[in-house]
Image 1 (cartoon, rainbow, N blue to C red):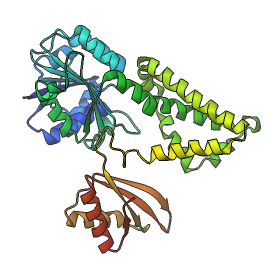
Image 2 (image 1 turned 180 degrees about the horizontal axis):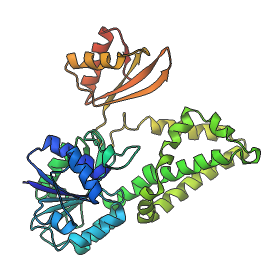
Image 3 (image 1 turned 180 degrees about the vertical axis):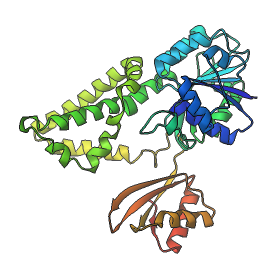
Image 4 (image 1 turned 60 degrees about the vertical axis):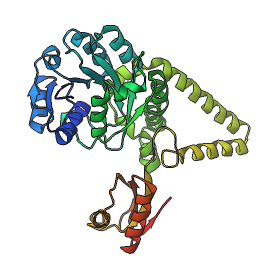
Length: 370
């Protein structure tokens, strides 16, 4: 059983973990370590119960240690705490690159400690404890990577208490090999970050000769959606780009080949081939994740048209609450002021989605399954 838990790094991710575990496992004692001013805020927000002045004292009696720090710091902390972790303790991290962390854990941690690499695929526009949210991980993928020498049976054995806490976050656990994890996140997270930066810089430089920012003024919702993550500060990405350099290089090379193919088709006026590329992309995107039965069981979506007026979202959620239907995710997809918009609502399974369509239709809303 996990009774005492240490979180090293109480910013957005560590603070959010503390908040959700305080809510769902109030029996836990959570000790935090960070800069003094960050610890004060974490304690004030209720993310931790106690403050530790240094990593060694934080982990000394902990049943579970969570390293919620940037990649390079996580690698250093594994060495720092190795001689201080309790016998039988569990250790995990939240870094977005897994192979360097697992390699370091295997090198420095004692045999009496059990390590499980973790990466909750969740974040927010702003970092820091003040933006921590106990719902941050709800329905998000929570990637888990086993070290060498362990198989999935360990998740039901010595790692079972940690798995229970992962599930308590509301995230959806996904167990995969560390190398595969790093290759996949390079394609779906790390390279898209670089592309968003490149696209914004391309648009910003498009009118350099004219001395104004007209290109950015012309940028519509599609451009903003594609480049939202360009707001991320480089300090967040420095360790990631270095730690996953090989996989990022490979993904960039593949992307360069795809761009070259498109460029060649344009030069050759081969619009049929370009149309095929568009069709392939649309087919692939439609499988994210609604219709795809790959890594995770997907949520079931419905779309609801709603008027642009105060209280409409409250009415929709209230209608579903009265019907006993639980909403797993909600997103405002489109809105036109004065006329209305479309909400995407996600549910645990198809039965809940069908029941939601029926309840909302009976209430006079235009609701449909995709």
